[in-house]
Length: 74
Ligand SMILES: [Zn+2]
Image (cartoon, rainbow, N blue to C red):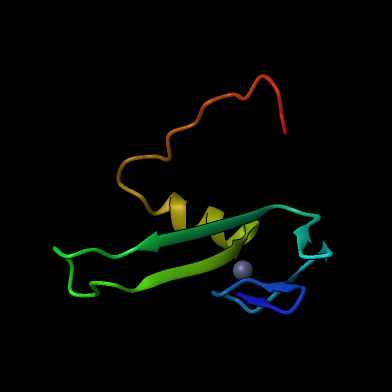
């Protein structure tokens, strides 16, 4: 969740360390625009998760997260 230049984990409310709105620690940001075939047509949803919450949620997946080793981190 973004408020001014602060970022919070939507799941646990932990404040993510950030500088000028840029995360300075692990952060998962999701954003999706729901379309015609959904029940949320025309809505944009977004949320942020701290790394601990991301790990807890994704560890419950029946199919693991797909991982690719980035050769060059941006
Ligand atoms: Zn969290």
